[in-house]
Amino acid sequence: MWIYEKKLQYPVKVSKCDPRMAKFLMEQYGGADGELSAALRYLNQRYSIPSKAIGILTDIGTEEFAHLEMIATMIYKLTKDADVEQFIQCGLGSHYAAHDRALQYKDSNGVPWTAAYIQAKGDPLADLYEDIAAEEKARATYQWLIDMTDDVDLQDGLKFLREREIVHAMRFREAVEIIKADREQKKFF
Amino acid sequence: MQQSQWREWHPYVSPLDPCPPIRVKRYVVPPNQYITFQPMNLPQFPIQEALFRGTLWPALWSPYEAQRGEKGGT
Amino acid sequence: MDQANAENAREERAAGDDAYRRELLEIQKIDFALVELNLYLDTHPGDMQALQQFNQLAQRRKQMAHEFELKYGPMTNFGNSFSRFPWQWIETPWPWQV
Image (cartoon, rainbow over all chains, first blue to last red; front, side, top):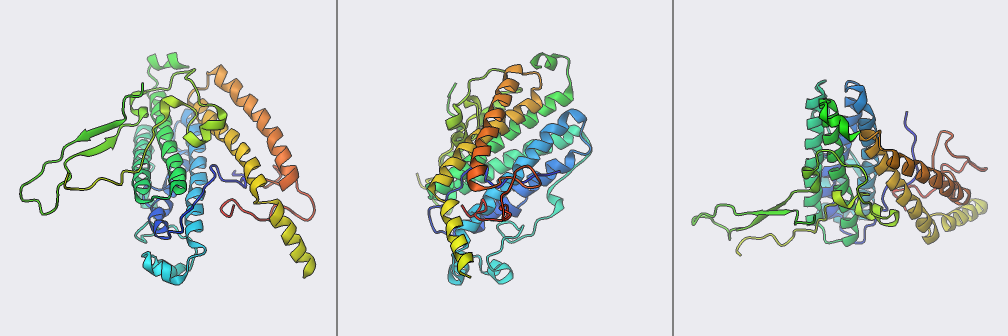
């Protein structure tokens, strides 16, 4: 069951009116390595993973929805006051034609999100290694997005999201150790 | 602890390359790569700061600055 | 019509202004620590110290959120926060508007 909290996890600020970034940010909204993929991947894997890993998948999956909301906020702030001309100049003309200023789960090329982006193999190591890879891919994507903007405030939110991916990867790697259940590992508890 | 998280490598440059070559490329190795299992009692950032760092623990913190300068010809 | 406008004006002044954002930031800071500790405890269930820290922060947070909600209205839905009349949950600003 999900409760919704009426606040962002991190205070997102956008200082430059540069709708161009909105197009690129879509990569983390509806893209293969984006936050929607992350949330749905982890929450879906929960149903078949060994019980000791359900907690971490539930919690990281939930946090990813909060990150999805942050990306949506960035896109929203960059596009809500833009005019049609700006949309066209920023390569978002097709988006405007289909959606006006609405958001949609598509990547930066307009390719719609698909469940083909996520996997649940039913094998805990396969699933967790996919999760670790997903976190590293998301981290890399945030690095490229940070490279692409000189808006320090926008960078700030993106750096937060990038660091979260590093921490998530850490937790999934720990989950692998827990799944391995080597006698040695019990020392850490 | 804070050895740089950056690594450099040198792509092969051909005399026939059409564009000014990029001679040095860099990538990040974040701290999670060196920790199998986070040990207990690691020092924490103060609560006032942790949100802006993106983590509670300095040991997991990986700063990143925009790499806009990467360009061929140097 | 005028009453609706007056209500809107009052609501715009109270929520979404600098004081609102400042106080919200304090909750965001402590909530972040709670999320971090929650994830950590998911893989370190035997870390007594972390667990105590979590519970202490959770207590403090409950108090902070209560005070915030008295001023600005409910932060959560489905009965996890209370509301005054008229139903406050639907008021702006929503998080992406702040």
